[in-house]
Length: 215
Image 1 (cartoon, rainbow, N blue to C red):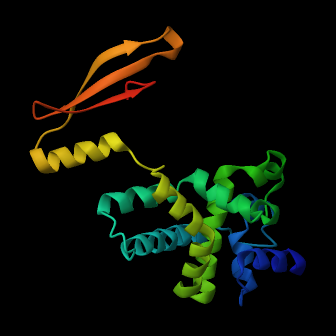
Image 2 (cartoon, helix red, strand yellow):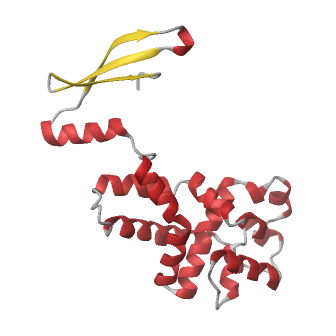
Image 3 (cartoon, helix red, strand yellow):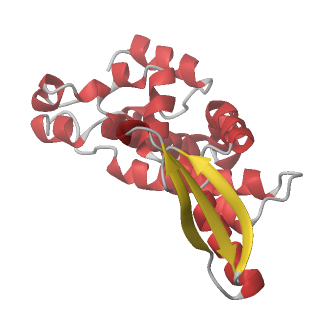
């Protein structure tokens, strides 16, 4: 990998590696290593595993220390959402990470540079590399720089919420029961139906909802 490519990516990351070989390892897919054993004997899966743990810890720490005092349930769901492949690949695309991956010929031919799974894995590997090279503080700075906007957007929009699960958790805690849903009306043509559903808790009506799905 050329020094120019390394410098470009470091600029995108806002982090200058002391050990460039860590960044190169983070960008090396298993397919490249297998096809070029003389050039490298390592690939990014170990760093990916490490980066996944560092990312998860930083996410939870950020949410835990937030002035909003999020519940364990909200923190767990937010973390789970943010480490999804689709979110990680979106972060990777924002810094053009696919451009810098070292792939085998077969993976290259099948569009590996734009595969969500490869991009997601590479992001975590890069985070693991930063952690080893610069320590927790530098890794945290990079993670929050890359993810903070996404975190804040998700928390404000409730995009990650599974409201039925949350309601069930709360009713079990407060009433030792689960909510019961009853469809009381459906109207509209077959492919554009509107459903009206009532939710009962412990035999009492707690609310009514409307929507295009019974869920």
